[in-house]
Length: 259
Ligand code: MG
Ligand code: MG
Image (cartoon, rainbow, N blue to C red; front, top):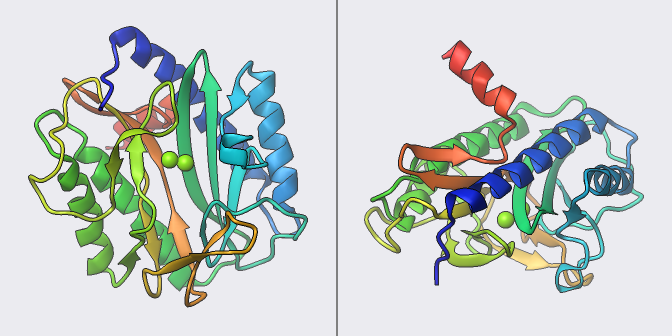
């Protein structure tokens, strides 16, 4: 069942979204060769708790950390570790916060130091896919429109879509109905209504689409060891169109000024 959100719910989700957006902004500044993902995880947890919120991931189905840190061929759900980031890595950070009973969920993929152009291109196209997906989050559209938008753009650039993991509805719980695949056909799936909130999260691979889970039971990697990029926003569907709740508001204003 898809749970529609009231205006009051959306206000709370906006606050949770802005918080996780600001956490990401601060974490991004930490990322450079020599830093460990465990240090980034610690910083994230402190920021979240200092803001009076809870790191949603910590303890979720037994996940032990506040962020997922997925490096290079790791797709999602990577464990932060004491391994130092190095020049040329790409790091995906996924983070969720629970504030006043509602969850915000956001992921970014960030180059570490000097990174090969092919990897920067993978990240850029993943970000474009996310923007195209957000544009579909409008009343009257269908969930399949979101997946179609991601799939056609990714495949046009020669990338594959991870099918083993999907986006999701979000609210008081991190994972609500419906599932939001990054592939699909237009005008199929659930009809989208105002008040729905979705976590849309394209996952693009440079090589094959298939993934496997490492023996830690969490870390998902590409089977061919090729890099993967993952980006995510929590998006509210409003009568006026999509609102990316996790996009820090100043950035929205800047993009309006630039546009
Ligand atoms: Mg996430
Ligand atoms: Mg998510």
